[in-house]
Image 1 (spheres, rainbow, N blue to C red):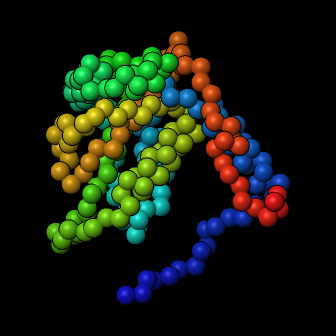
Image 2: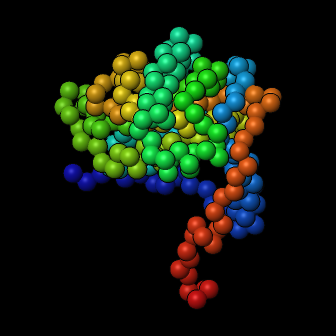
Amino acid sequence: MAPRLIPLSEYREYPIDEMRLRTADLLAEMRRRRSVRHFSTRPVPRDVVEDCIRIAMTAPSGANRQPWHFALVGDPEVKQRIRIAAEEEERSFYENRAPDEWLEALAPLGTDAKKPFLETAPYLIVVFAQLHGIDDDGTKVKHYYVNESVGIASGMLITALHHAGLACLTHTPAPMRFLNEILGRPPSEKPYLILVLGYPASDAQVPELSKKSFARACQIWDPEIA
């Protein structure tokens, strides 16, 4: 069946000088982004966080199946349950499952099995990847490029939260199936990540890190520079 097509009416084109200014402004803003592990208990406006999730929901997805579910958790008791379960998995990781090479790579970040930020931060967003969907009549609907689609949406969510003036941290204890039980999600949804968010603590510190240079990260194939 041919799709119903509509005019591309909301696209906006900008003069080249404005394009460069907008891009430079966003680049400068995103270079200030850091993963934060020390959060303030200050409340965060929930409507702002909800709009950030709505921004993530505009992400492209395989066959437009939108294979994501976002669980916004602000309940202290639920956050505590998540922390207890996550720390249990993390202790197993650090003490038994993590190879020495992985632990050496993590050492400069100062991470360990203790995850107090899961309770301190005002909100957690648990992102689930839906392995398949259910139609209105109960029929199972196949999803395509699930991890890629949810990854793009998660990146847009992180960008939106930073743009709003909030700090966040991606947290991925493994395995994470305890989140299905705690949050009442079906087996067809796989926990993708926990996004911890809020204001950074007044004494928050971050590791001194550097990013890849543009030359190392990007190869350009363009006849203008050949």
